[in-house]
Image (cartoon, rainbow, N blue to C red; front, side):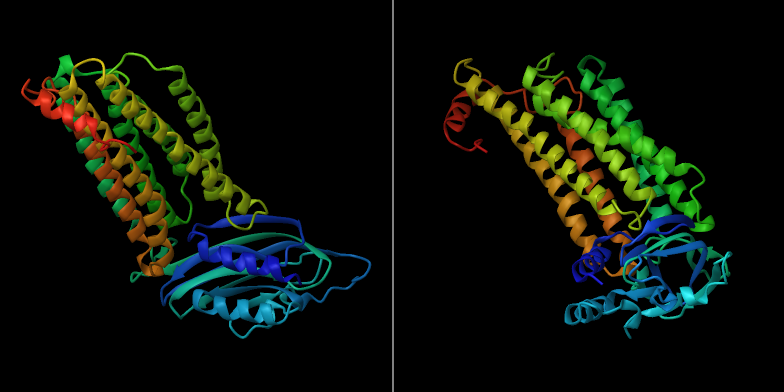
Length: 436
C-alpha cells in the first residue's frame, strides 16, 4: 500500500468540513487504498447506519483471489489520526484495518454470498467525538465497485434523529436570526433611499439588491439545514441556496468593484481597465460557485474532490486580489487630481473615504478567509458553529460600515467642507499618508 496517498488523505480529513445528510454514493472501479466518506461529530447517542450492495471486486492476474478481510469500513477519531499516521510512516506496507486505533465496522468477508454481495447494519457510537468514516482497500492491485448508503445521526432526548453534526445543529437558528437582521437592514435601507431620493444613485439600488439576495441566501440556508437536521435530505432547498449564493457573491464583488472605482456617485462611467476587472471577476465567480456546488453536493469520496477544493481556493484568492485594484487606482487618481484642480479639501475628504474603504475591504477579506478558517480548524467539534457565527457577524459588520460610508444623503460629511479647511488639506495631501 502506497504510503504518500494515505498520509495525504488522512491529512485532508483534518481540513475537510463536517458533512451530514443521508447519502447514496456509487464507487466505480476504484483502486484508491483509502476513501473518506463522511466526517461527523457524535454525541453519546450517535449512530452510523451503512448499507453496501452491488459489490464487485476485480483484481489483476498477479492477485487473482483478493482477501475479503483486507477490504472494509472503519471510523477514525481526530485523536487517533496522528497515531495512525505514525504507524503508516513506520511501515509502508501497513494496512489501516490492522490498527488498534480505529473503530472497526465490517469487512467484505461479512458480505452476503454473490450475486447479492450486500451488507446492512447500524452501529452505535457511545464515545462522543468527531469521527471520519473511511473505506480501506489493503488488497494489492484490486479495484472496487459498489453502491453505499450512509445514515449518520445523533438521537435527541425525545428519540428523534438529528442528522446534523453535534457542532452544527445550531445552524438553522443561527441563519434564521441573521436573515431577519438582513431583512430589517433592507427595510431601513429602502427607507433611507426613499427619504433621500435626490441623492440616490444606481449603486444604491445595487446595494439594495445585495441585501435582498443576502437575506434570501440565509433563508434558504436555514431551511436547508433544518430539513437536513430533521429528515436527512434538503428537499431541493440546496438548489435555491446555491442559486441565491451565486447571485449574492457576484453582486458583492460587483458592488465592491464599482464602489472602488467611484462609479455612479463620483463618475457616471467605467474606464476600460475597470471593465476588465469585472470581466475577470464575474466569470471567475461562476467557476468558484461551480466548484462550491461540487464540493458541497458530493464529498471527499470523489476522486477530484481535492482538485475542486484547490480550484475554489485559487479562484477566491484571485477575485479577492482583483477587487483591490480599483480602490488603489481611485486613490492614486485622486492624489494626481488634487495637484491640479485646486480643491484640496474635497480631494482630501475623498481620499480619506477611499482609504477607509480600502482598509475595511482588506480587513473583511482577511477575517472571512483566514480568521474564520483558523476558527474552523482549531475549534472543538462541538463548537464548529462558532466559525459560521463569526463569519456572519463579520459580514454584517462589513455591510453596515460600507452602507453607512456610501449612504445616499444630500450633505455627505465627507464632501461638505469649509473653505478655511483648504490650507490644512493641502498640507495633508503633500505627505505620504495615502500611499498604499
